[in-house]
Length: 543
Image (cartoon, rainbow, N blue to C red; front, side, top):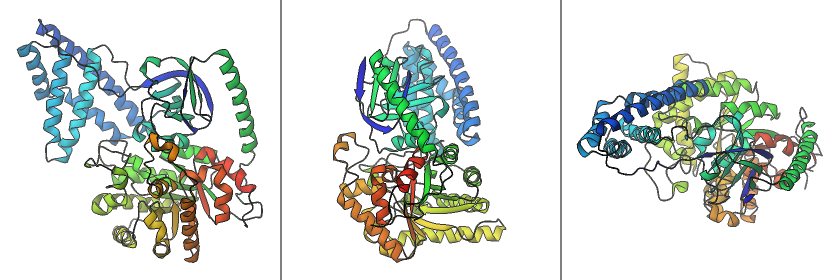
């Protein structure tokens, strides 16, 4: 038995087989090929396998995500027949008498370099497609066509790391748990695991590798441990612990249907955080009273092109209708830092967490921002929508953002398109600057939502994506508590409500303090709604 210890992200105990997601580039060596005809035949056979894979991926993505995201696989299928690409591969094989794998790899390098240097945004984006397609061809050539990042049946997903986009696009019905070698418990991939209610462990170390693919394993998300090839005693202990967890969940389920209020009768709005349309089912199942954070950026991370107004409108409308009159707070696009996307041509940064991201991108790209705002306001006609802007540091940013809002509202009126005239506008308080001047910012908006994940990392000067700093990351730091209390007091003084949507809201150890500090709304992972409702019901609001 091998025991690997990390940080537990989402509680729960599961037993199953490992599916290791390997994102490493295929190993390619230069080998002399005396018979070019044999190598060319291998290339054609590999292309046939790749074409079949891409067709299957297209159909699956079309069904799960939609036409816009699925088109990427159509583009790659067309690349298989690109004459310039195929001629380049053929020339290396026939003229230099080298193996097919090497010919494809060199061609990929050359085409990727050429496309990435072009001025046209569309052509630059295709450089990543050439690399993806070429890696697929090489895997087909070296007999590893089935060793892709896909799996069938229920599996424990293991990887060196998982990006947020990889996490959000997983088939949740087949994911028993997620375990990564690196990563932080407050990374966005970890937060998404919580949203999906999947037991997860991060930072177990580099001993977790592809050699364990297919092995039986047990994951304890509560203690942050994965046991590979567990012995009988370990399985028995985990089974007993699992029964206790199930017993606790049954007790918590009895809180369904109850209003969320403190022991002395103060009403608290208890909402849930989501990353996409598919998460709404968990929100409803766990009896949340609304959605306190819809991370709209994941619509931008699902494909290679920007999501159109219609794609966004359909997603927002579906969520708003599903919530049946309950408030849905959508955060405008928060791309940047660890949330990368191929649909925006963003330059690499030395310190992306404090770089060009979120509202800064939106205010500099009015056409992209207005597309999202139009989709949001159109969807507002179908329920109760609120919009909030992330990474705000000044009143001027809010006024500029509201200028775009006014433009969109005027356009929709002129076009005769219905929308809610009373959509609440709020901001995320996630920078120390916003917290310090929250008395000024409160005069510009209808509500605050405190994003404790970023607020903590900026206040403590700790990169929350860096696992080495995990031991220094203190979400209970007195400086952070002072900031939260200041924000709540300033909001109430201005007559607006204030919520919390960061991970601190899901921490049962903080519930009592937040209530006594005067918080009006708490938004948590769907799986934590009933747990926090129980904590709130045991709390006295008065100090």
